[in-house]
Image 1: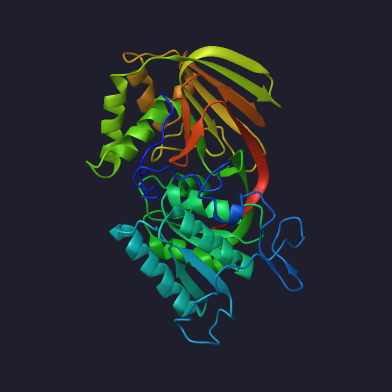
Image 2: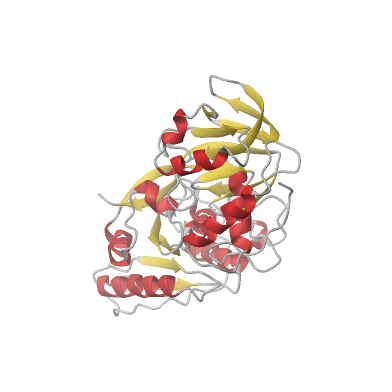
Amino acid sequence: MTGRTPPGGPDGLNEPGAPNRPGGPGTPNEPSGRGPGSPNEPSGPGASNRLDGTNAPNGLGEPRTSVRPGGAGGRGDGRRVVVLVNPAGGQRGAHRAAETVLAHLAAAGWDAEPVAGADTAGTLALARDRIAAGVDVLAVVGGDGMVHLGLQAVAGTRVPLAVVPAGTGNDFARALGIPRGDPAAAARLVTHGTPRAVDLARVGERWIGTVVACGFDALVTDRANRLRWPRGGSRYTLAVLVELTRLRPLPFRIRLDGGEVPEVELDATLVAVGNTAYYGGGMRVCPDADPYDGELAVTVVEGAGALRLPTILPRLYNGSHLSHPRVRTYRARRIELASAGVFAYADGEFVGDLPIVVEAVPQAVRVLLPG
């Protein structure tokens, strides 16, 4: 479990040989020096786009070049939406889903602009520029990696996020009840969804929607990201098998602020901190996580080796692993994780080497949801 700079992620967000760290502290590719928690949020004359009701500096980038496919004066009444698509491209499902979204917005008369930069940093910069210029919705088309990118642009603002799942895992959408496998239904949420304030986790300046993973699960994600074959869920299965041959528990120190237990030191195989329940394409690693309660759920698999861990892993899909004697759970608002040579992933993206601090941020983003 050594620290590393892994190449491309499952949604193609990482450039080869370089980490995708939008909004990460000290990140050289952070556009315009803006972190997700910084004051460069959307503003406009006489209106506020921030959750606290204040206006931030405008910070406009390049001019908008949006088009209105349905013609001016449509039923959208001039509403503007940026559709964020994968900068890596080449994913047929995501491409078709984006076309579905744009067709729906055209029919609704919305001012729709598809945005994809040359790389992750460029895409994030474009998204922030559009938000600063003033938009009504930021829609992301893709998997959890694209959701992660979108969160860096809208968290802490009043601009709602719409998610059209078109990736491998889609765990953020799964946790919030956003339609998966039905781009048309998800597209309708852009125009007719109900905005609801949702909690996020944060590591430094990085916003996180699902689960922060370190240990065996982070190693599997890292391995899967570097595999070019097979595609889809089979890639994760192969990554699990490879990493099981190298598995060994490592000493962790876990500090929990706001929970019943202040600190834990133990040898662990897997440590997961969940804002939502799911990761890895439907594994309920933190089944008690609730993105509306202002807390984080922690799941620890204690000292399970290569022979015992395979008996626990299948139970992650239905949450029954919580009854296993080697599984511990905690709740806290702030968690410090430390272990020498270990790194963390979140939303399928590389976060950094431990130690890290994971904090719950209540009602950090508005998401357009069914009902």
